[in-house]
Length: 371
Image (cartoon, rainbow, N blue to C red; front, side):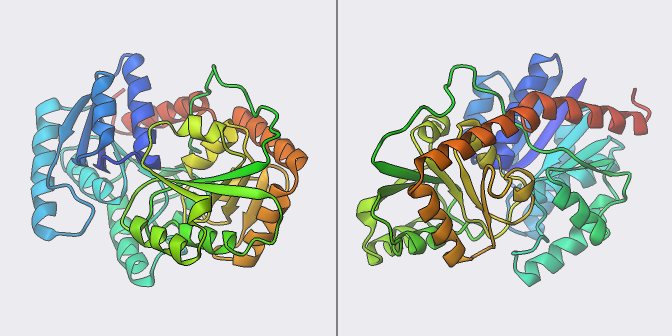
């Protein structure tokens, strides 16, 4: 069976990691896997390193551009007619819209994985209205829609994006790391916080910086920011203005995130909106307590007060209180970290996600009489 994945950007964000891991495992199971990518990035190298066939679609870009979008339609149409996939699976908004339209017109069953809807709460009103119109239309071209959180499935139903029988929730899952120990005892006097996220409007690293500059606590701490993006330089400048540059490290985009998490003590994700963040699962796998904004499907991963803390979006005071609680309590950090690890093993492993995803693929093929 030939499967074609389509995704807009080649950066290593959550959706890209999802596509990478899924395509590699499906290839190992005997599927003929192709991945089409619009914008170049490290995802291409990682796929090609593992023998995945990658096709670059230069006109497939994130920004709305009628001319380039039409070119992307033509290029994807040519690709589909060339490789004749049995199933097309699309990821991210632009790839999802164009990829679903092309596959629909070629009578090829397709799935769309919504890694967080572009009309979710926290997104600007103008963008929400636009994408709501587009996603309603695109749903009519779609065989199955996979939502990475129950929050997103209910949001789609609330706004009439897709029919109930089209929509299914499959939480993200990541591989278990066999050769890592879960949270070694930690007597380090310096408590290290870490946030792994792209510097963009969606994430709010600056909130964490502002709160960190106001912490009233004797314990020594530092913060590692992992990621790049358009707001990186502005965030670095803010750290200088707040006079906490000596406590902050900007590490850029990294491929050794699991190793960095193993050296950390607290994971923080202050997002304005989310789907179901893979970075939270990576932190739970590393045995870290998680402090995250209560947006999207985050509360489906983190149990408030048990595996970490949920805070209202943009709530600096609650974030400060929660940080001070964890920084000052090593036993609580370890207790929450272990609870998070156990929850990850029970609910969010890659194999569990794979089984559910393949079932949806098979249902999509059955709906088209392909199997």
